[in-house]
Image: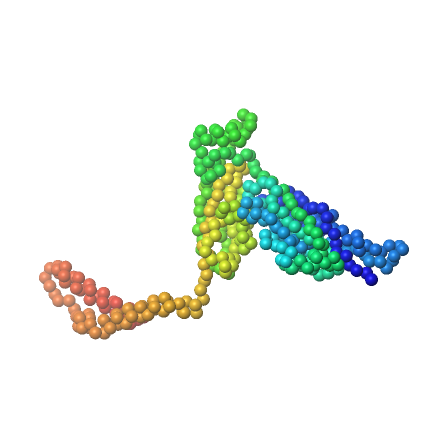
Length: 385
């Protein structure tokens, strides 16, 4: 009787370095990466002498069961199922009991932390063949039992996935010293920086003649959970010697180097963050926008976002402090009404014309008259309210 044999995984996968960058998000498909590592030769039994024999299955997707990348110091593995329009992070807690299953048309990308160069922690992926429904959509599944079954549609072995991230310095070399920490160099430091960054006399002269120092500022915003917010980085957030920062190349990350969380995105063209904070994100988050000019200078703008919750009216009404505040306010109003109703001086003198006196009134008389007028106005306002 025909029995399905699990596919065999062999070799390794190297994601090309062009798909490992924090500057531009590009991906490579699962089919292109893992196709050469897939084999189902044991099921290819059909031939001229065996026309009814079984036919080998094809690669339907993968099940990622390991992720050793360090999100803070290296970067994050990402996947897309909509041709690169949106990207999701591959969790570092994936395992055979909580595997991330991706179809063959999904794409993989590694988003390196700004400034990171080298080989980050990689992925481990089992191969899934056609004939089942395991890898038709992206989802998390327990594949441990299937990987132990020689007749299942998933390989028992895994394929290691690595890449090489290369930090690209755009423009001329970045100068050393305080030119990279939002400060203006002294003449001695400028000379040393240019000598370190440029090799020939011509390059050094060019480097000195084209310095546009930039410095960053800070932005503070308050948002509430569950709402869409756009936080713009306005023109002028970067302070430059020529008075404009519109020609800077902008990138964004969390303060400290970690990539943006999945609920925050940054559009460099619009110079704007977009976010919908989840309920468990209350507190604050510190974001950083890095501006780089064509001469390699960098500066940072700190974006400090405070996240709170917007309380419904019924929750506010149930708050004891709100009830106490309203009660205190009503007591004040009641005291004022009693004062107006039972103060004999107010009723007796409020409409009494002033007595004619010779010369200017004394200070005491003037203060008394001002007090009566104020009491009358106060009473009228309370009655009108």
